[in-house]
Length: 224
Image 1: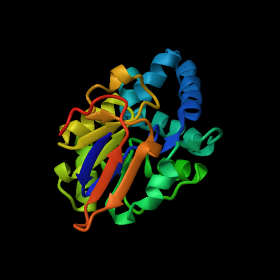
Image 2 (image 1 turned 90 degrees about the vertical axis):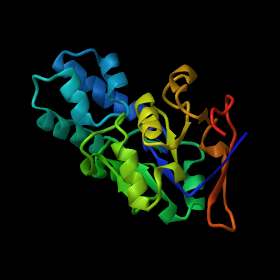
Image 3 (image 1 turned 45 degrees about the vertical axis):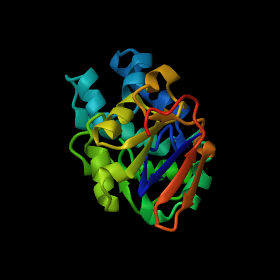
Image 4 (image 1 turned 180 degrees about the vertical axis):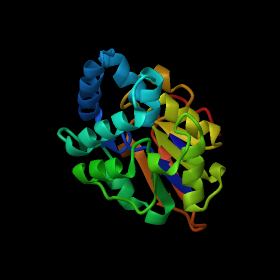
Protein backbone atom coordinates (compact mmCIF):
# COMPACT_ATOMS: atom_id res chain seq x y z
CA UNK A 1 0.00 0.00 0.00
CA UNK A 2 1.29 3.48 -0.89
CA UNK A 3 -0.13 6.79 0.32
CA UNK A 4 0.01 9.97 -1.77
CA UNK A 5 -1.26 13.48 -1.16
CA UNK A 6 -1.62 15.54 -4.32
CA UNK A 7 -3.70 18.38 -5.72
CA UNK A 8 -4.72 16.88 -9.04
CA UNK A 9 -4.70 13.73 -11.17
CA UNK A 10 -3.88 13.30 -14.85
CA UNK A 11 -5.16 10.15 -16.53
CA UNK A 12 -3.99 8.60 -19.75
CA UNK A 13 -7.00 7.24 -21.63
CA UNK A 14 -6.36 3.98 -23.49
CA UNK A 15 -5.17 1.26 -21.16
CA UNK A 16 -5.95 3.35 -18.06
CA UNK A 17 -9.62 4.33 -18.27
CA UNK A 18 -10.70 2.49 -21.42
CA UNK A 19 -9.80 -0.99 -22.58
CA UNK A 20 -9.25 -0.42 -26.29
CA UNK A 21 -6.62 -3.13 -26.83
CA UNK A 22 -8.70 -5.34 -29.09
CA UNK A 23 -10.22 -2.47 -31.03
CA UNK A 24 -6.99 -0.53 -31.58
CA UNK A 25 -5.05 -3.67 -32.40
CA UNK A 26 -7.59 -4.65 -35.03
CA UNK A 27 -7.36 -1.24 -36.72
CA UNK A 28 -3.58 -0.92 -36.62
CA UNK A 29 -2.99 -4.48 -37.84
CA UNK A 30 -5.27 -3.91 -40.82
CA UNK A 31 -3.51 -0.65 -41.69
CA UNK A 32 -0.07 -2.24 -41.35
CA UNK A 33 -1.04 -5.09 -43.66
CA UNK A 34 -2.30 -2.60 -46.24
CA UNK A 35 1.07 -0.83 -46.13
CA UNK A 36 3.19 -3.97 -46.14
CA UNK A 37 4.40 -3.43 -42.56
CA UNK A 38 4.78 -5.83 -39.64
CA UNK A 39 1.34 -5.77 -37.92
CA UNK A 40 2.54 -6.83 -34.45
CA UNK A 41 5.41 -4.37 -34.42
CA UNK A 42 2.99 -1.70 -35.55
CA UNK A 43 0.65 -2.33 -32.62
CA UNK A 44 3.52 -2.10 -30.12
CA UNK A 45 4.89 1.13 -31.59
CA UNK A 46 1.52 2.83 -31.90
CA UNK A 47 0.40 2.49 -28.30
CA UNK A 48 0.93 5.64 -26.25
CA UNK A 49 2.08 7.86 -29.12
CA UNK A 50 0.21 10.27 -31.40
CA UNK A 51 -0.79 8.51 -34.61
CA UNK A 52 0.93 11.02 -36.85
CA UNK A 53 4.24 10.56 -35.02
CA UNK A 54 3.97 6.78 -35.31
CA UNK A 55 3.35 6.97 -39.05
CA UNK A 56 6.25 9.35 -39.57
CA UNK A 57 8.46 6.92 -37.66
CA UNK A 58 7.56 3.73 -39.52
CA UNK A 59 6.58 5.00 -42.97
CA UNK A 60 8.20 8.37 -43.72
CA UNK A 61 7.41 7.91 -47.42
CA UNK A 62 3.67 8.23 -46.75
CA UNK A 63 1.56 11.35 -46.36
CA UNK A 64 1.36 11.23 -42.55
CA UNK A 65 -1.55 13.67 -42.26
CA UNK A 66 -3.63 11.78 -44.81
CA UNK A 67 -2.94 8.39 -43.21
CA UNK A 68 -3.64 9.78 -39.74
CA UNK A 69 -7.04 11.01 -40.91
CA UNK A 70 -7.83 7.58 -42.38
CA UNK A 71 -6.88 5.74 -39.20
CA UNK A 72 -8.76 8.17 -36.97
CA UNK A 73 -11.91 7.73 -39.05
CA UNK A 74 -11.69 3.99 -38.52
CA UNK A 75 -11.04 4.42 -34.81
CA UNK A 76 -13.97 6.76 -34.28
CA UNK A 77 -16.38 4.45 -36.10
CA UNK A 78 -15.10 1.10 -34.84
CA UNK A 79 -15.90 0.92 -31.11
CA UNK A 80 -16.63 -2.81 -30.92
CA UNK A 81 -15.08 -4.27 -27.79
CA UNK A 82 -14.45 -0.95 -26.04
CA UNK A 83 -15.17 -1.02 -22.31
CA UNK A 84 -14.27 0.82 -19.12
CA UNK A 85 -11.39 -0.72 -17.19
CA UNK A 86 -12.09 -1.97 -13.64
CA UNK A 87 -12.47 0.88 -11.15
CA UNK A 88 -12.36 3.66 -13.76
CA UNK A 89 -15.98 4.77 -13.51
CA UNK A 90 -16.00 4.64 -9.71
CA UNK A 91 -12.78 6.63 -9.35
CA UNK A 92 -13.86 9.35 -11.78
CA UNK A 93 -17.18 9.82 -10.03
CA UNK A 94 -15.42 10.28 -6.68
CA UNK A 95 -13.13 13.02 -7.98
CA UNK A 96 -14.15 16.68 -8.19
CA UNK A 97 -14.27 17.39 -11.95
CA UNK A 98 -11.96 20.40 -11.62
CA UNK A 99 -9.25 18.23 -10.05
CA UNK A 100 -8.56 15.84 -12.90
CA UNK A 101 -7.92 15.84 -16.64
CA UNK A 102 -7.38 13.26 -19.34
CA UNK A 103 -4.09 13.46 -21.24
CA UNK A 104 -4.21 11.28 -24.33
CA UNK A 105 -2.18 10.82 -27.50
CA UNK A 106 -5.36 10.57 -29.56
CA UNK A 107 -7.47 13.41 -30.90
CA UNK A 108 -10.29 15.03 -28.93
CA UNK A 109 -12.80 13.51 -31.35
CA UNK A 110 -11.43 10.02 -30.76
CA UNK A 111 -11.17 10.47 -26.99
CA UNK A 112 -14.78 11.61 -26.81
CA UNK A 113 -15.98 8.70 -28.93
CA UNK A 114 -14.15 6.13 -26.81
CA UNK A 115 -15.28 7.59 -23.49
CA UNK A 116 -18.90 7.58 -24.63
CA UNK A 117 -18.64 4.04 -26.00
CA UNK A 118 -17.20 2.85 -22.68
CA UNK A 119 -19.92 4.61 -20.70
CA UNK A 120 -17.52 7.01 -18.97
CA UNK A 121 -18.04 10.74 -18.40
CA UNK A 122 -16.46 13.10 -20.91
CA UNK A 123 -14.53 15.59 -18.77
CA UNK A 124 -14.44 19.28 -19.48
CA UNK A 125 -10.66 19.22 -19.22
CA UNK A 126 -8.64 17.19 -21.71
CA UNK A 127 -5.27 17.49 -23.38
CA UNK A 128 -5.24 15.66 -26.70
CA UNK A 129 -3.09 15.41 -29.81
CA UNK A 130 -4.93 18.52 -31.05
CA UNK A 131 -3.44 20.61 -28.22
CA UNK A 132 0.26 19.77 -28.36
CA UNK A 133 3.31 19.94 -30.60
CA UNK A 134 5.29 17.06 -29.13
CA UNK A 135 3.65 13.85 -27.97
CA UNK A 136 4.68 11.37 -25.29
CA UNK A 137 7.42 10.52 -24.26
CA UNK A 138 7.98 14.28 -24.43
CA UNK A 139 6.72 15.89 -21.19
CA UNK A 140 4.68 18.51 -23.05
CA UNK A 141 1.31 16.70 -22.78
CA UNK A 142 1.51 16.32 -19.00
CA UNK A 143 2.92 19.79 -18.43
CA UNK A 144 0.00 21.11 -20.48
CA UNK A 145 -2.39 19.09 -18.32
CA UNK A 146 -0.99 20.60 -15.14
CA UNK A 147 -1.36 24.11 -16.57
CA UNK A 148 -4.91 23.33 -17.66
CA UNK A 149 -5.84 22.40 -14.09
CA UNK A 150 -3.85 25.27 -12.59
CA UNK A 151 -1.40 23.22 -10.50
CA UNK A 152 2.38 22.81 -10.37
CA UNK A 153 3.69 19.59 -11.97
CA UNK A 154 4.96 18.28 -8.64
CA UNK A 155 1.44 18.59 -7.22
CA UNK A 156 0.02 16.24 -9.87
CA UNK A 157 -0.16 12.47 -10.09
CA UNK A 158 -0.20 10.58 -13.37
CA UNK A 159 -1.84 7.24 -14.12
CA UNK A 160 -0.26 5.52 -17.13
CA UNK A 161 0.03 2.13 -18.77
CA UNK A 162 2.73 2.66 -21.41
CA UNK A 163 6.50 3.22 -21.14
CA UNK A 164 6.28 6.33 -23.37
CA UNK A 165 3.67 7.85 -21.08
CA UNK A 166 5.59 6.94 -17.94
CA UNK A 167 8.67 8.67 -19.30
CA UNK A 168 6.57 11.71 -20.19
CA UNK A 169 5.12 11.97 -16.69
CA UNK A 170 8.48 11.52 -14.98
CA UNK A 171 10.13 14.06 -17.30
CA UNK A 172 7.37 16.50 -16.31
CA UNK A 173 8.37 16.09 -12.67
CA UNK A 174 5.24 14.18 -11.61
CA UNK A 175 4.59 11.05 -9.58
CA UNK A 176 3.61 8.26 -11.95
CA UNK A 177 1.49 5.25 -11.03
CA UNK A 178 1.51 2.55 -13.70
CA UNK A 179 -1.18 0.00 -14.49
CA UNK A 180 -0.24 -3.47 -15.86
CA UNK A 181 -3.05 -3.49 -18.41
CA UNK A 182 -0.97 -3.36 -21.59
CA UNK A 183 2.68 -4.10 -20.77
CA UNK A 184 4.40 -6.58 -18.42
CA UNK A 185 5.69 -5.36 -15.07
CA UNK A 186 9.27 -5.25 -16.34
CA UNK A 187 8.37 -2.59 -18.89
CA UNK A 188 6.87 -0.36 -16.19
CA UNK A 189 9.97 -0.07 -14.01
CA UNK A 190 10.37 3.68 -14.52
CA UNK A 191 7.06 4.37 -12.76
CA UNK A 192 7.06 5.24 -9.09
CA UNK A 193 4.82 2.26 -8.41
CA UNK A 194 2.48 -0.16 -10.14
CA UNK A 195 -1.13 -0.39 -8.96
CA UNK A 196 -3.20 -3.55 -9.16
CA UNK A 197 -5.93 -1.58 -10.99
CA UNK A 198 -7.86 1.64 -10.62
CA UNK A 199 -10.19 -0.38 -8.44
CA UNK A 200 -7.35 -0.61 -5.92
CA UNK A 201 -7.10 3.19 -5.65
CA UNK A 202 -9.00 4.83 -2.79
CA UNK A 203 -9.35 8.61 -2.86
CA UNK A 204 -10.49 11.10 -0.26
CA UNK A 205 -10.40 14.86 0.18
CA UNK A 206 -8.50 16.22 3.17
CA UNK A 207 -9.56 19.25 5.19
CA UNK A 208 -6.82 21.16 3.36
CA UNK A 209 -8.55 20.40 0.07
CA UNK A 210 -5.79 18.06 -1.11
CA UNK A 211 -6.49 14.64 -2.55
CA UNK A 212 -5.40 11.66 -0.47
CA UNK A 213 -4.83 8.51 -2.48
CA UNK A 214 -4.24 5.04 -1.07
CA UNK A 215 -2.89 2.73 -3.76
CA UNK A 216 -2.57 -1.03 -3.44
CA UNK A 217 0.68 -1.77 -5.26
CA UNK A 218 2.16 -4.82 -6.94
CA UNK A 219 5.72 -3.93 -5.98
CA UNK A 220 7.53 -1.61 -3.55
CA UNK A 221 7.03 2.08 -4.24
CA UNK A 222 10.07 4.00 -5.51
CA UNK A 223 9.02 7.30 -3.96
CA UNK A 224 8.57 8.67 -0.48
